[in-house]
Every structure is written in structure tokens, then in C-alpha cells.
Length: 375
Image 1: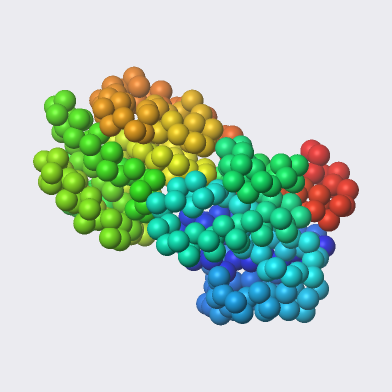
Image 2 (image 1 turned 60 degrees about the vertical axis):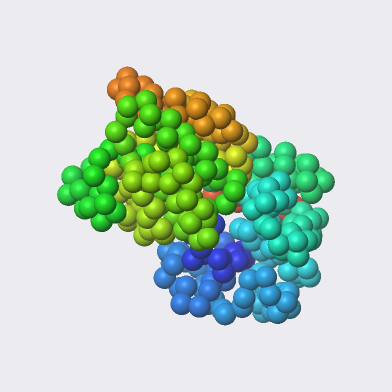
């Protein structure tokens, strides 16, 4: 069969990593098929898939034009199946489609998308995708339940397929690398790391309040917040000033993957305070870098972190602070979290993700699974 991947957002953080790792794993695992990778301009080297045809296009995401041009591309290249690793599908298609709906965050967390028009468009496209996709892939059992709840989607056509960690994220033990990243960002003592964009659901404000609890208990630490904060940075800096902890909080802004790997590896603790996540890649990335994880007990996060994290109610900063202190200062707890993190990672592999994704393709085309798929 000939399979097309719509990878026009491969340059985006998060979703881009998923697109890259998934397409590379699928094309490597099933080289008997033909593949068309639809990429952004200059995107040819963003994915390693030597047996795939690559098409770089300036076709904009969320544009009116894509609704006409994507079907033309699929027809011209005689594609049998389209996989959209994001939720957007052309309304008219010449072939069946599999879509990945990672979550329904903007339906569940309205404050994360304040534009009323934006919410209407998002809901319309999500509803269209849930109806039109032949099969839907999602990242967690929690997300499947939410897709059924908010979109009234048929649960029988939704497959839960866990993604995995980008292999790039692994422990960096070289002391010179760790010292360099500390120097680059002005980190002069042991630190707690959080990585992610600014959104209300990410719960940065309560993280600052929990960090204040930690400092009041006598711990010496910095809190490093890595990721693009946008307008949220001024709000968070102001709150840190009010709490009297501003001199202990470092905002790095958007960091390159190489620096992010070093920040994970050098951190004393990784914390995920989110109120809502469809999966929570950063939790696994931290575990892959050998860092103890302290994690919110909300939504999909316990499903992903398993027994390899200390949990807290994300609406209770005091509880968060207590768990941070334990992971920060108790050597026995730290060793257990690190060991359990390594074990937890064994539940997630891109090879298994690819195998299950290929099975979804066969189901979408109503074809029998190859014998190898049952192995």
C-alpha cells in the first residue's frame, strides 16, 4: 500500500517530535510499503526515511487552500491511506484516513484558548476529524475517554497507541557538559526543573508557591523553568517577586534540544505540575535522562509515569512542596525513583508504537494483518 504522512508541523516542539519518530519508525518497520512524506519548505532533512518519497510544500496549516490542495496531492500520488499525526483532515479525500487526536485540551481547558472564534474553529475541526477519520489513534486511555466525552466519538474506532521518548533524550554524564549548561543559564546550585510552554493548565503559579514552601523548609535550590513563556513570563516574574523567591527562579526561554537534554540530566528533580495533559512527554524524557520525577496526579499523568513518580494534588502547593522536598533530599527515595523510571520506560518503545500504528492502517483499509504483526 502507499501511505502518506502529513508532516507539515514537524518543525513544531512536541508534535514535531511525535511526527518525526513515528514516521521514521513506521517506514523502517514496514519497508514493503510505499510512503509519501508531506513536509514543510526545507523540511527534507527533518526526518530520516530513506525509503520514502518526500514532498516539501508551502501549503499552510489551517488554511482554506489546504482543503483543496491536499486531496489533489493524494490523488496525484495515488495514495491508499492518509495518516494525519495531528487532528486536521481535508474534508474531502480520495482515500481512507487515520488521524491522531492527542487530546482535547482546548475543549477541556477553555482558558488555554481565550479566543472565542478560535475555540469555535477548533471544536469544528475536531468534530469533523472524529467523524471523518476511518480510525483514530490517541496517546492514552485518558485521552480516549475524553474524545468520547467531548466529541461523542465512536469508541470502537479509537485505538490507544502509546508514543515513546525521542531516543535523543538520554542521560548526559559528562561533567563538562553539565557544568557548561549550568554556567550558560546562571545556575549556581542544585535545581528543580520544569520544561513546557506557558498555559494556565500548566499550573506554573502553584509551582512557584510550592517552591516557596520548599525554600521555607530550609532547602537551598533554584527552580529552572525552561520553555517559551510569552506574555506569561511577566506574570510569573511578578508572582515570584510577591512570594519573595524571584532570586531563586530562572527562566531560560526556549532552549535547543541539546541544552534541554543537559538540563534534564543535571537537574536534582524534574517536576510536572500540570492540571491537564493528554500524555506528558516531558515526564518520560526526564526519566530517560536519569532524573527523579515528582508529578501531578491529574488526568493522564499517572497512566504515563506509573510507579516511577511521587504524586501530588496539583491544586495543593503545600503537598507539591512536600513531595519535592522528599525527592530532592532523601537519597533512598531518589534512588528508587531513578530505578523505577528506567523500568517504566520499558513500557514505551517506538517499535511497538509503529507496530500498533501499522495495525490501525490495516484495520482502516479492512485488510488482514500480516503474520508478522501478530508476533
